Image (cartoon, rainbow, N blue to C red; front, side, top):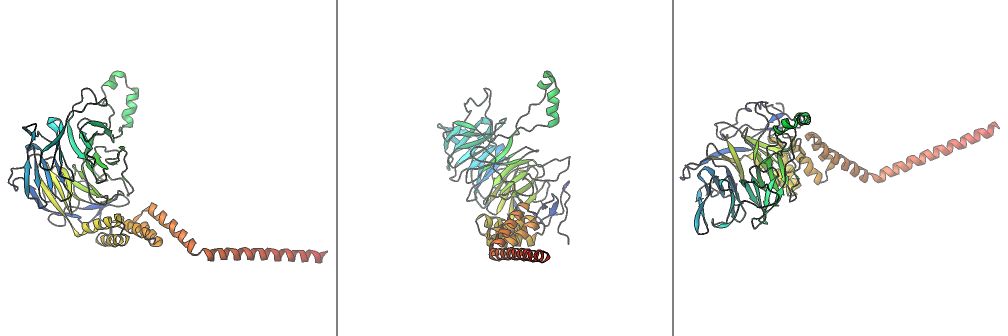
Length: 474
């Protein structure tokens, strides 16, 4: 059978492999959609009714802690639902004590839980961020910030929130185009971080140049694209998604707000490469950062989850819009819980639980082994993944990188060539050539000296003969 089976992405891909396994594909070096084994399969659905707390009403966010406790922001019911790793109910938080009186949330949109169990809630309708401890007791409230950097009529409406280990709070707020709002640990506003660049349509820009003042006043201003979601990793780097359909919809921001996301794969991380004009490109609405620099993004338009490694290679995708197990209606949030992936559906008010397949576990183990410096284990896992999926060109690049670290430059170059990884191939070939020259340096130099000696000898003999001949003529 051929190595590549093209998928039709306009409506849906090929038939699912089994119940819970949605259509899976990857993209080749040439940007073609190729068939792939499923890395995840849906195993169950969790609802508020099952938990006996009433239905979830337009839940909008979700967070999973290191010990796999799950927090669901049930926005329509203005409450937080905490579940254990088995997805059984622990408690419901719908109020907190505020200066001796019971206070409530109102249509909160964002939730973050720190490693020590502290909760931050983007209490949107109340225009504040509520910071609670592990017991649900109030630590502080971040309200309308005061700063010369803000407009006089600015209204603070937080939509998403995260916090780093230094307890600096980062907020994605409605109508803010200057990036994320950064707050100090005491709740005071510090600055903006990571603003998107302005996206300008050349035709519209040219039209504005020749338009009258009155016409320009009626045109839409060029403004940076707003972010759609955020997550933060163990080192404090912020991963962000945006509605930037023409540029870079995924970013990794450092403390200075610079984008340091590596885009060394066959194409920049962006979700689907192929799409119909009717549906348009992926609309990324959430990002989840895993271990070993792996991260996943959620495409709300097509209901797909794309997972990338730290270099920007697409590892796998799953999901879709539909009525089957493993498909969604209005996906809004995704979270990794060990070897599981949880996806929250706002319209259906449910959580779909996905479990990794053998293929998914093998691929993840290969990435982890390489990240941790285990070249031998990484090469073995990548080879196993390639046996399961001959279309996975990235696996050959992974083997090439592992062999490169082991200084097996000749074999490394062959695998890079097979994966179409030009930069890796050039590096491996250059190192192989240097190694070859170093190993055979004495032979090469001896040969050069011998050639030079022969040439010198021949030249001398010819001159002597020429001199003898000339003497005889005289």
